[in-house]
Length: 96
Image (cartoon, rainbow, N blue to C red):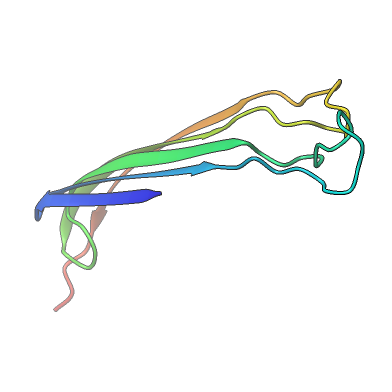
């Protein structure tokens, strides 16, 4: 699921969410997990100022989250959640 919103020329926001329920078929119960299949992923961000090819100052921030996932089929060993936060600022030159 994704949503993008740009109410003005100088502000935009977006968010993406993915949910999965990955399982092997034709295996015994309790040994059906798919290793490294991420059950929840979220990504979202905001942008301020100049956007696209528009000249001027801009700033933005983004967060990405991946939920823990099974590392083997029985799910007795799981990976850790992962969160990444990024920001950016800058100035786009005017093109004449």
